[in-house]
Image 1 (cartoon, rainbow, N blue to C red):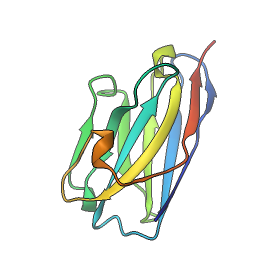
Image 2: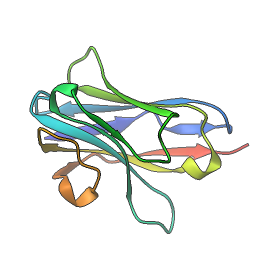
Image 3: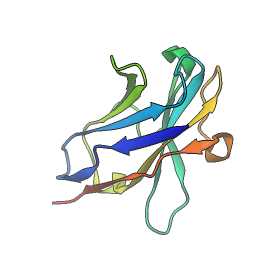
Length: 123
């Protein structure tokens, strides 16, 4: 199982980024994908997840109304569209996966992790 997160970068407050998580060795019909982030000096926190098959999604309160998780036409890719970004969103963003029907937002619930992509929101 391999996960490749990409799409991070430097963006001004109010801007947007789309993160991608490309998965290999698994089928998203059976695996859930979660997005997490970790800011300097803080614990890793769940941001969003999408269940196997794409039927259920979860958003942390900080992401609701601003972030959208989706599965791409390339079937083994999951996207996190992030709009109205704030300096507080600055963090390394990771995607993770596990065999699951539902959606999980605790890092301990996931088995495989990508390498992370840095998002910096600053003027």
